[in-house]
Length: 127
Image (tube, rainbow, N blue to C red; front, side, top):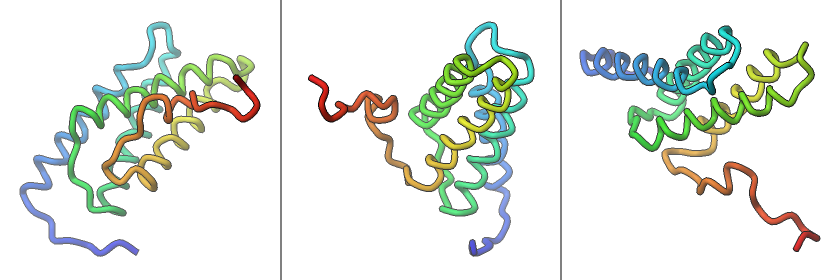
């Protein structure tokens, strides 16, 4: 259970930044994405960043975080694009949610290298 901290006026500033970042990240969807994905991306990113704040006490959002979150939105869109058409919306939402869960639980302010996130690691048995 998270320990509640006293609310301060600095929280207003930080919350405003989080709202702006969620909008910026949602705008990073690839061109031609279904209109509903923007709402899903906004809600999922906003929720994830706020959960990171509550669970981990993290109130930092740097340019690197924005780039990572934008990459998550783009990766989820790419994965959804390869799903059967009737499941694309669900695929986008679930994949983005899982990426955000991983970010909140495991990243702890440290980012992985692009190839680790993208899954470009060598697979055993491949040359």
